[in-house]
Length: 575
Ligand code: ADP
Ligand code: MG
Image (cartoon, rainbow, N blue to C red):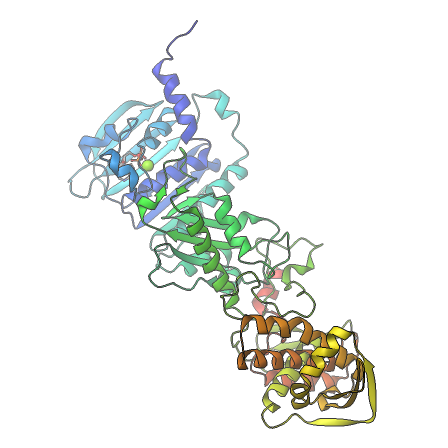
């Protein structure tokens, strides 16, 4: 038999779409507070929200005459006409949240409109008003929700442990705190304040409150782009810092948290070649665009949006994130977000291995700047010892430094040779010229660049066929085998020379080729991993590194060192 459902059941079914769990109640109430222009929002929770949730704000309040109306379905002050739907600037607009929440719980709402003398206190149970009276209170609204799903046993059974529900609530509060840095949020669980955002208006301050000082201050700010219709702001993790899942990629569109697989992918894509595959960055990205260019009315929980120009938004996000990431060339600091890193994954701290012979460069987006911006100089470091005949351990003013001896020496040699280039690179003649056979395709290149090579201290001459005679090498290379040097240089010419010529022409290409040759020469000349060093050698290397312009990366863009601050050490040891 077909029959029309009684209104309470209809209300409960509809409520199910908005109120899935305690966290969705919190989300809706906080959105209302934000829409009401609150500066301060306090959230109190008992038992993961299963027993009680309270959101108190200092916003505009609800006029006494409209309090009951606010709890009616499809009653909203935020939308007046159908056209308004095309340019929604508030978080709410469906007029469903309060009605839905009230339908499945006991609600107490105390509110006072800023322009009225007295406030109102109203109680509802299962959506029915059970009492109402005037009260005195400051302007603003406090909504208390008790016994969620008390009248929907099927639903109540699906509530998870308090800890789980609590985690969902925490996620929402931190999202909103990040998206609204001018507001002060305070979150209290079972009487204990667990989170507070400072309301300074700076997103980084909120990130520090959410992720801790170490992570918060390491995040890179997306540089502003003048005059863009799609504005992209926020913070992203430096490349040395990555996570096992994409859960820390947080996206907002016009101040609304969204789940959007494509935009998430745009963020991940921006790290292409910079972090290992299967690892993900941490990002908080705010996209702002004209309200008419985005449809937020896709989903009852409003977590999905549709863009008029999805490709354009995708590109804007990818470009902005890429820019932030490539402008970075700092020291990787050892990080562990929320507890220790999974033990089987030491690469948490590392740049990916660059493909052989290529500098770490934003390959798919050639319009971007090269990766190495001038990085801060080094403090004075004191050698402690060597590990695995590969890394030097040193102490600095703020903690521990692990230095990759090969990468560090490459950097030292590279800057030295670049500086010597104009005045002539010191060379050393070989006692006996060394003959080297090269594959035909390389032989041509070496011959063509013979003059450049000569200028850089690699003195070679053709010796018939594909054979070359090496007569002298840069002094820096005395310990390397001449054949290895020429092979490396020829390979560099083959791989990087062609690329340089394709991208630029004339002098710029020549300059790029010189740099490529120098990088190769330095790679050959540098101390290898696995070489035991004396204390004096280590000291000398560090002194030379301290004098470098860009001591923190090798000429191929990989880090020369990892810094573990004293604060980080203290945290790791739970002191
Ligand atoms: P919506 O937010 O979609 O309008 P709600 O059911 O969440 O629907 O709220 C209904 C109305 O109640 C809002 O339009 C607003 O006028 C009022 N309201 C709700 N919460 C608050 C609050 N914290 N401060 C001021 N007004 C509020
Ligand atoms: Mg609302």
